[in-house]
Image (tube, rainbow, N blue to C red; front, top):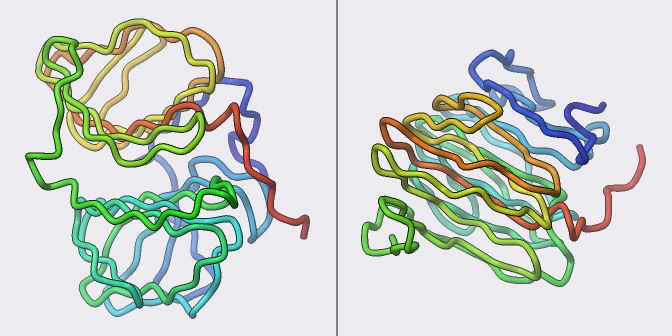
Length: 227
């Protein structure tokens, strides 16, 4: 299955417009933002767990990165309320579950085998925000490996990320508020991938909070095995 799989072109998805697609396990559904592969795939998805649902124990042969958007997610290693950011490296195993239900933004098969760090960050902590030097723009670094960086950005009303070069591409998900650039408007729930090349100014009239990944398109990890 291929969904927005051509990494050389811009892709924009209003996640609210996508259908929920059942996973192989009851109570777990997905909205697929990008996908390249069958059930084992390089993928970016929203995953919704019904209360009391779970996945069977499994190993992430391509690594896993997730951000909890609502509810409470849990596994063998801990409990992750809304706002939790986590990375499980290649070869790690767990049994995901939730008592009350949850919604997560998850990326699979985007992690390099040499990136061995387990990451757990509570992004609700205000003291993790840093000034960027751009007026009204704050950043919360989450993780970096090689050319790839992962962070949350917070733009005050009227603030903007300036025009910039993207030697490794850029991906964003609008967590709250709205923003826009010369190519379009991005309300809450929008996922946007920009390919390698220049990017215009990204501004927010009312303020917004973004998950933003950069550099990953220039250092793709090994692809999952063909089905």
